[in-house]
Length: 562
Image 1 (tube, rainbow, N blue to C red):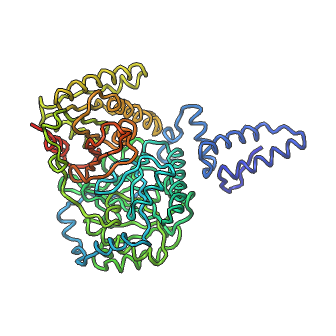
Image 2: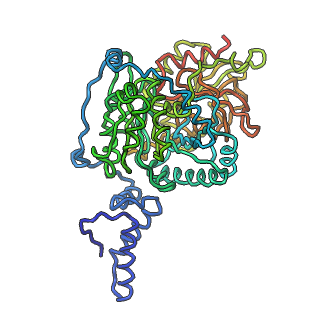
Image 3: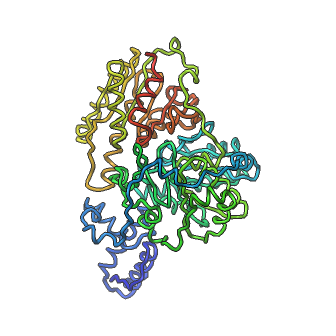
């Protein structure tokens, strides 16, 4: 028999207890059918990577076996007693003007001197989709993490590099296993190279992603940290954090993140705009109001790096730290204070937006790059460009509409019918085959081509099934890139999962260089490896949620020959 005594056991402990019970039952020749069945369920849960869960791990096994969602059918009142605080939208200009003036001291050179030091740890950025490179330039992105590749990268760089994990496309337990394995590989290669390193989990600046699974996976692989630092600020994307509340800039207004469409994500939805509430909502088993610290805008702008370092040194082990910022300079000041705190022995794990990475490496922005900057001339490449779009956030849909309106007959559009593709493999293969041939012919004739998924968002019954539908859509777009019969002049991939899969599967990239940006917050890569497809073709990673409605059209126009 099984029992509970008010003590919450994880799967590992429960399995061990049941093993003792079954051994004793066997010795006494006493049947223990219920214990045997429960034991098998807990073992199955452990095999799925849910060893840290209690009875909820068994519930998840039943969900998989019966194809049901307990969380979906539960009444909202019983899901959680937690109620996040509510915040109004606020005007951008007046709000920013009311803040203290930005810190006047120079900090970038201090950060760069630290980065160039032989004692400085290499920053290893695990990016859950390719958009995290949107504030960097002249830095490598790896899409593989085998020992030889990591050892080579550690040997060649002093500052840092990205590893594209694409973990946002995975189920939570799979993402956790992936991150843990990458961290172990990184640690082994760093030891052999004689390098220290820090881990950054670059996540979506609108708070979508695997929290707390990914940070906990890093801890399992590398040990405990003094605290988690949460810094989703991203100026180019209009993501501000003020008084611990995360906002998304929409026009002249700052909208609390939980009131935006991003919070309604079928897989990574949330209810909290205040980042204290967000941490408790997502990881209430380890955080409470008592162990969440804040680096305020006043700390950054009035106290400067010294105040930031002082507060970070006071952080108690096992805590979380929220970073407030409303300007890029705020993040550089925070980074300078962080460096000082780390030099006294503090060790943090980072869950951040793109801005933290460039600030911590002392990378300042450059102007968006054009085809002239890349020395691409009409006479040397008369092929058309390829734009693929799989993102469903409202901003992407609006940008696609603007692109089609502005380019008119200069753009050939191919729409993939998602309802047809998820109906059967044969139907999906046919849709992809027709689209690929049509795109190849148009690009060969010098016409820019947009391949987009139909705009009706189709979701599953729960987060996992929605994720699977997204995977099917991404796979179709990747096959178009993979089977394209002609080399395009450039490739723009719209959306995180789409751009990741297009790079790794469609173009077979293993290592690329971030050249800069095609527009503010829109990364531009180039892969020169001879084993990749379409070597050195400019590859634009266009996030689904960045820019105005006109930004995509503006990029395509700048990269067009007419």
